Image (tube, rainbow, N blue to C red; front, side):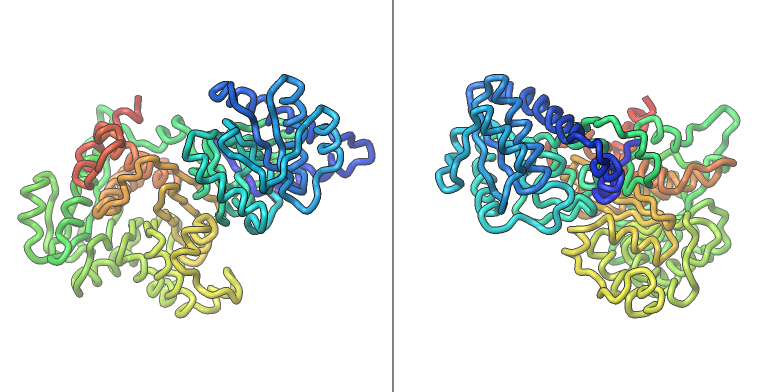
Length: 509
């Protein structure tokens, strides 16, 4: 498992070392040397150009100045621009002693540089770049579109090291060099701004065991452990049965996509609760699905999926059935907001239930929770109002955790980086580079994949953690999209569905 920590926890880890009477600055020197080595390696791609170091006021700027000193000693052409109210005294002195050149921000010519080292704001900074620093970065953001490489020191300046929240302007990095361990932005929504992350060890990493990761990512072998693979004595009922209560006459596509996605995970059986004329559509597209018109409570399943494309009174009742069921439920789309009302009346759900909102649906859920369950809201959030969609998108890690704490369920908050929060406070993230997934029906496919995997998991004597299965579903969803034209072209939801078996086969190796 790959772990990331808050900047505050890393600061606490470092504190006994840097405040000791005998401390000699060795941690900064090691960090700066690691930054220098990675900068020198990256500069090989722009060998005939100069290097520009953007220097802030704090220790991040000190790392940049010491790294620049090493680069000068190796014969690189380096300029530095000071963008803070002060500069790290010893670092600046070392840089000047090495013959380093300081340039005025107003005379900066971005076209002269092939590599920029962003050492303005570190993980301890709050808020974004201001004044002259913001002006310079805004200029450079335009120029980096013209093939200038960027290496960030710890995090790209303007990205919060504790939450991953992004305060523009931010200079996107090709490489981020961080120290001791990954920080929250490296595994959360800001990850796409960080580029490739390189961790430089400083010799105190054993102390990380004292701290809980803020966010983690499963590695391939852990994803495989969450996958159920049938054996010679399995049959359709030991493979899991998923009950699906999705779609409506208004949105039949949600039913078609979610049922076929579920079938394509290899689940033993899919039972579909019919409304209107959906049965004929379902069976023409996916004849393996068993349709039923009786009450959902009469069905024997290992998991429920409800909410996707669900409109009308019949589907509203179906969502309540899924919420009340003893089996776990995947609660998508319309079921997300309904969950807030359910929780206010009946109490929190079990952890093995999964909410699957996008940011807009989570906004609605949180608005309902703040209105209907004020005491619970106040206990978890305090006096703060429910966030807007934009606020959720800027700090998804926090709001996924809040939603999980309020509901008792596991919350899968969809995005280019998906955050999966459990009520115990742990969070997993899944990165997707399949940006064509942002299309109608894609979420219905994900919910179907998740329903199939949860049903299979619940049929096991030792099921995997719910959050791990949710992460697996997100990976399969993303990989299924990438299989379509190598992820380089439009990927309609129906094409994602068709690729699910192949994506699972590749994942199993």
